[in-house]
Amino acid sequence: MASSGSSLAPIEDRFSIILSRLERIEASLSGLEDVKKLLVAIEDNTHPEGDSKCDFRNNIEDKVTVEIRTSIISVGDIDTVGQQFKCDFYLSATWSEPQLQGRSPTEEIKWNNEWHPRIVFFNALEIEKMEKGHYLFYEEGNKIPFAVETYRIKGSFRENLELWNFPLDYQQLTITLMSDWTNKLVAFEKDMRKMDTIRPETFTADQEWFLCRHVVTEATSTVKTEGSSANDYPLYHIKCHVKRKNGYYLWNIAMIIFLIDVLSFCSFAVDLSSPSDRLSVTLTLLLTAVAFKFVVSQSLPTISYLTLLDKYVLSGLVFLGCMAIEIAVAAVIPDTEMQKSFDRISLYVAVGVFVIIHIVALVFVVRKSRNRNRNLRESDKLFRERQQLVNKFAKEREQQKLTPGTSKRRRNIATRQSFVCRGFTLPGREIT
Image (cartoon, rainbow, N blue to C red; front, top):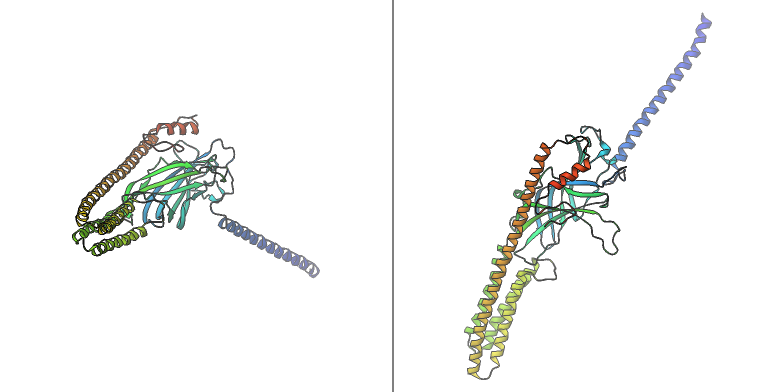
């Protein structure tokens, strides 16, 4: 018995050694599994934003149509001199995604590994905040899901302001989206499921501007130029309009120039025998008008053309210069009677020129104001028509039952052809 017990002891020792080794191997394998999970997490977190591991979807017949919908939350800080504005908005991009067919909307999807439209904000100067999200949904009667990429953006955007009619101007503030895919692979289009919206109550520049209650969108593509890329890329323009409140400029600049020109007639009340006194009055008024011209220049960027306000101020300067020349010419006429006749005729001519200048200025103000209001009314009318189109499209989608055997492409073509109203066309054509 003693010998048998002693023979079992080495066997037990060997089993314990084997068990300890198995435990160490199991611990090593669990550690490797943790390392694997950590590497996957690092790969997901360091994956370049906006990049896609999948260059493009396989077996694709048509280019992907990405439907855009936007909601402008707030617009403000419109910098006329810097030609930029700030905007806070929500944007969603929707496209049909056959690669995710059969996946549940509640299922967790690694979107970094999936195809996406590679949207960039073409005219963004600074993005202060960007929140990006994804989700999946199915439409009734369609087995192919739709992928949605959402953005919440707050930033500054570049806008080349058209200042020909300043201060009677209106501006079109544009946010331009571009895809890094070429237009052979991707096309932008308005999302007809929901209407684009804008919130005038959150407008922060209402002391100087009036925000119109409409959003205009247009799908275009980049234009080839010499030395540019051989490919064209799709663009999508989101536009809102603001109308300048011109009271400040009319009362504080135009009215002052008007009074300076009127006061120049006071020089005719000074006797002809004192040309120095008459000339000093006119030159003082001329220098005052020049100072106001510098005030106008500080309100505008460096531009190579004259605005309406520039033209009015310069006409006042030219008028004062002509008055100074008249005084100098009258002073060198030796004959007293001829001098008085010349001065009287010059007064009548000056009054006539002054009246003509301001009649022309008044006509320009009325015409430019009417043209501005008419253009904005047309944009507002087109926005309401598109709103009716979206509502009609939604009703048709509720009533429409997709017939078996009808291909998705044929259904999309039929839908696109049946929802075109006056003033709106599908992307790739101009908005009239």
